[in-house]
Image 1: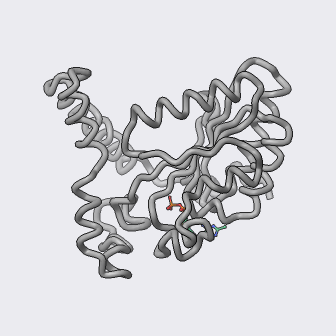
Image 2: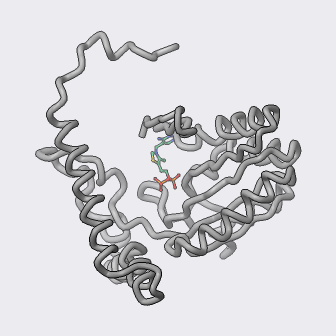
Image 3: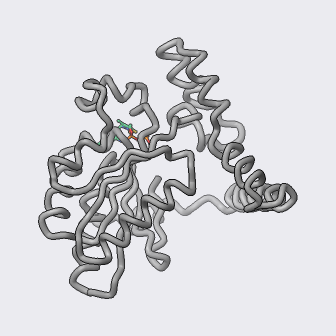
Length: 238
Ligand SMILES: Cc1ncc(C[n+]2csc(CCOP(=O)(O)OP(=O)(O)O)c2C)c(N)n1
């Protein structure tokens, strides 16, 4: 949350659910005016698609044929709420990508745990956007394996929700355990090794290097001095 790296084209994230969708749409409008072939990728959750700003953004993006791909990560939960409890399409047994029809743009629902499939569909959407044909809504299905808000507790701080909502709220132990068994990372690794795209040794090297990088980042953050109280007001515009 609250991360940004504008130099690398990453304009930012926010704790306000759905807030980045109109900002990304504005960035796509800027890209269209500049005419340099840039395409915006906008990521958000299934819950965010219930925000009015989502609908306003899809409407104007389709109307003005803006170069943007809306990537909705449907992880089956919005906080402690199941998707079918908060989404009319899900409650009717339809995919959430159905929402694309209302704004006359292509909408696809795919296995978000299959990186090659995601790459294929997003590349098609990017090519369409770059050709001036407008946006696409890509719904990627990937079950959330961690409890909401669990992943960012530093050492020594208790996890807010030690147990996943599927278990804690709905008592769906089997569902959650099946999701754990379908973890996309080992699934992709096994497939890439079986298909000869990756050797087992190189897959292990990637994992080891990624873990070491994360460990370094954590150690650096914990060793960094506390910010001065006046820094709390830096970059605060309102
Ligand atoms: C405008 C707004 N309303 C409510 C919240 C509280 N909230 C934080 S996360 C969350 C659920 C978001 O669900 P989803 O968009 O599916 O994203 P996920 O966390 O599942 O990736 C909610 C309701 C918020 N941060 N912002």
